[in-house]
Length: 206
Image (tube, rainbow, N blue to C red):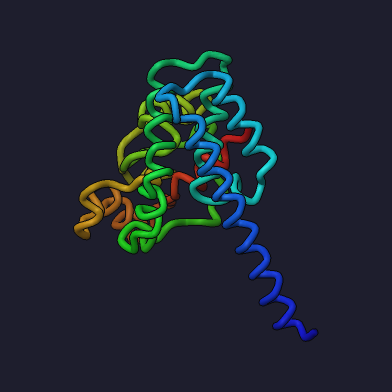
């Protein structure tokens, strides 16, 4: 078997495994939400399952959902706000909303710095859009706890983090002033990096 045929076969096997695992995730989420309640033990179970399903938890949207679950469980207390946001995220997963937004060309066509190495200590962050990880205040708090600073889009900005759920106006081709300003600063030589929520969440660690 030549190299191209072997690669094609491996790629097909990987896609098939991904479909099966994603289907399993959807089934688990359906079971969790079936009674209209999201219990602490169910959040912990989801965390454990995603830990074992690396092929799903390392790519969008599983990666950000897993990061959100990790953040919720980090302090041992699940707040009502965290519970409600995770519930809405999982409901969006069942409805296909996450996939459709992630595949929207106007969102993914942004000039993301996908290979950016994100450091938090004494770095200036700004957030735009809606986030799978949590409310924007939750995302900002995660940065502050790691020594980062929250600010606006200026020449001194280090990272503009774009929410994985995008923003309603992006469907109509309008990126929003924060992204436009960041792009302008970058074109003039400013070191600002525009990163997807997925890249940022991966930098938070366990």
